[in-house]
Image (cartoon, rainbow, N blue to C red; front, side):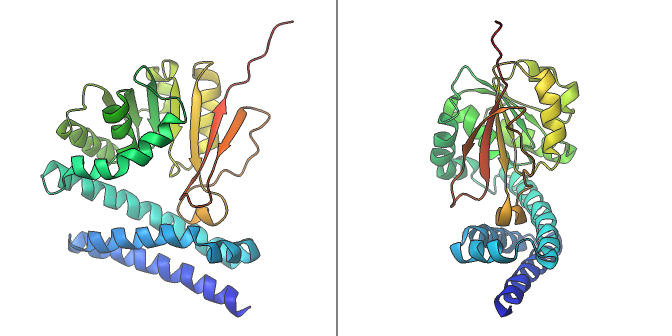
Length: 266
């Protein structure tokens, strides 16, 4: 049982450190680098094979579950904090956003090629955040039209400014409307739901009725230990959607592609 409590302690320490660094970064901008480094460590922590094995043993224990959920809420808040800081830096020429995107674009572009996203696609990104790197790569590298949706009005405002810095404002649009209110939903060929979107099932229910019949929904989530940094997918969707899982053990989130059932008339 010693290993269990050592694992529990590591979750508590991570949550404490990240929470403290959020506070510190509000007082000192240089602490954002420390916060980003801690989030990077968290990503490595949750894909570490040894930690995955520990989760398989004790992930269902109440103490582990409660502290994992607390860590997730803190890490999600921290990431939103970091993204806003990155956007502000980019707008003030303190971050070379073009170089930053170049570092990530190859892996992101490869990911979206698997989903058959091309220049003719129309992509709706739900939960895009203040620094929507995936959406910007889709627009810049693939040339697809992208509509970014987020409930955080400040995040939308900052993301819009970063997109303008890159000269992508003509094909990347932003909205804080709900899925119900958005006309673009009927045009979208691909809909991406970010792993940090909590109420995935309510959104999927809306999409089932309102999205085009041939739409591909790319749903990011994190079950098991990946739930310390992503909201999970804890419901069987096989009766409602055609499913294709695209998951790798080393990825920081899992992905499933959902498509509507098409029934042939007899």
